[in-house]
Image 1: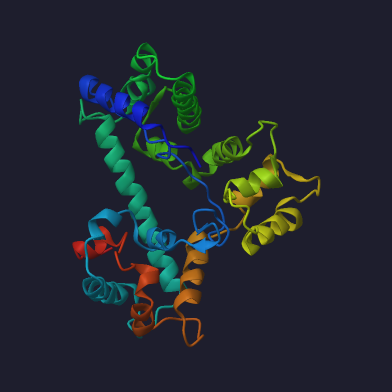
Image 2: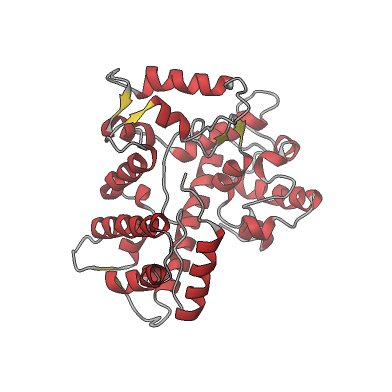
Length: 327
């Protein structure tokens, strides 16, 4: 979604971070889009199923730790994981059991992420129970003055200033008691606004800002598609999935049939009412691995489709499998 910085800018920022001890924000650190997994652009990239999405939904954040495991070791540890998911020990993994596992895994990821970033922000005072906006801004965006002094391009500087603006908007929304500081619960809302009801507006705002390229306050079908697909220069035929997505935009996303998604239509797209992400992902995984079509999985079926869950270079089982943790 967000373009990568050119390597010269990255080098300057890294050097500044080393010299001044400043944190460099990742452009996608606070990115959140709660779309239907079956149509989310991160789940299907250029029409090709992205197994990494399933790994993360199923397992959490420890992809790098698990990348080095062989397929044999992956299967062995996956088998142990299946026993943990099978709560009633009947030999089958149901949608409900898989949904509960995914929910726990995602909650654990969020808690671990908040803990990690909280420690970074409070490194100077580990006893602190709040983080002030000024301290956060200094630690995370303090390098901006140095970027300007080093004549970095205006576009790149503006990109970071836009990140600062968006973070400040999130911060104010997360700051329930309006004291310009966040406690750990408020900091969780700041980092993961999709998890808090009172933060949902900012998720919609950020999505609109990311996709609305001409900044007219609404999303055209072209902008919607360009968020997921960029045609190559060869002029090859448009993939079938792009045509289907355009049809979905016109028939489902664009409720009032004016040719655009407005703010409320975007809200229904990314935060559909009564939508349970964990349940949707559990159903998707079962469809992927259920060879006998009985709507539940055996250990054998899961191991047969282990690439769906962990892949040949298994991703996010990480902590749970590597350390044999109990959830």
